[in-house]
Image 1 (cartoon, helix red, strand yellow):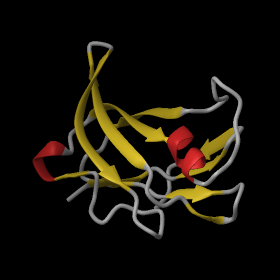
Image 2 (cartoon, helix red, strand yellow):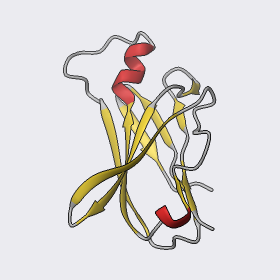
Image 3 (cartoon, rainbow, N blue to C red):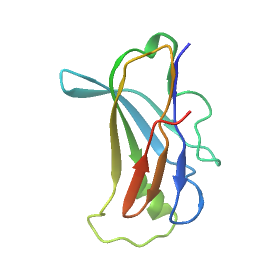
Length: 117
């Protein structure tokens, strides 16, 4: 059975991105609708898959990471408005029987993602 997972690495500080709120949105007719949410644990991971079972279907999705709030909690000064605040990753799920792992590597001024394993 397929599932959607993620993890966050804080590349500016060389540690897991702990305590980051993540919203999961399904995009239908160009409109995102929040269908789940989670907060990363001390290892920068979620304690369970973001989506699995019947809720994990083919389609277009977004993961919305609250990176700005995380860096503020870490005491990292930032100009207002922040260069990065919410990091929105839009991606497609074509094969809902597979594992989709979508990691985020963040710093206050950049991010990287990829389909992991």
